[in-house]
Image (cartoon, rainbow, N blue to C red; front, side, top):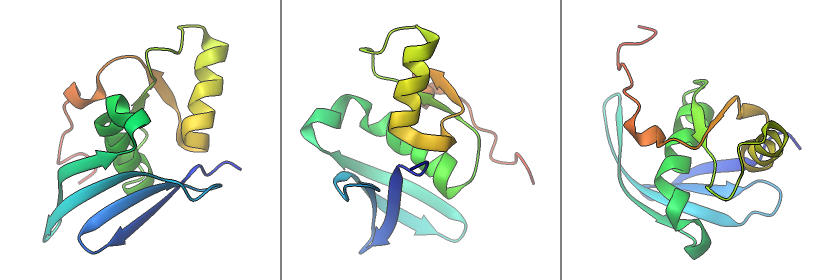
Length: 115
């Protein structure tokens, strides 16, 4: 119940599916060289287009890299802490540590962090 996503690599793409239903939500094309993973395109369900890039970034960092990182909540979620916590858990389960309405794509990530 705490894990909300299944993530697979298949045929040059990373697939992001809801763990309970198996619904495919995002598909990211990748270019992987040595120790670098570059997402070159993201496809999403029509109802997820607005959040696609932000959610995929969060899923890659939190689920694949194991990094505690903020996740973006849709604008429809209010600033009420209880509503934010419920939405966060529903979207990302136990890996949802920090919710924000900000654009997480603008956060600078130090590539040497932890090295």
